[in-house]
Image 1 (cartoon, helix red, strand yellow):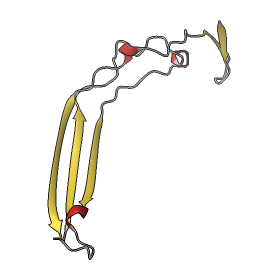
Image 2 (tube, one colour; image 1 turned 180 degrees about the vertical axis):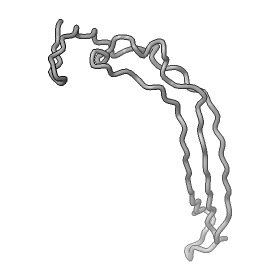
Image 3 (cartoon, rainbow, N blue to C red; image 1 turned 135 degrees about the horizontal axis):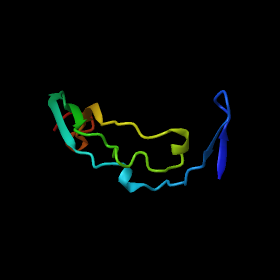
Amino acid sequence: IQETDYASETPQAYDRATINLNNPQEFNNNWGVLGGIGASFDFWNIRTIIDFQYRHSFESVVNPAERFRESEFSAFGEVQDDYSLQNYSGSISFVFPLRYIDSQFKAL
């Protein structure tokens, strides 16, 4: 099937790519490290927990040998970029033990 691209100055004809939305070889396994630090402390009768984490992957999750394989968007020049996963995360938690509190909300 022939398609025509009118977005550029002169119309360009190209063959439509075979639609392939299931390419399991396109992505690599992700491996990396995770590090974190946290602290907990009691404030009155509430346990407070603060946690920070960092995740870092060591290689791109996109397989470079498979990224140019025909897909729905390859006719338009759209391929997966190299990218790896790095992120920071943090959390804060409050634990309020209801089992050991009387009707006046005092610890037993």
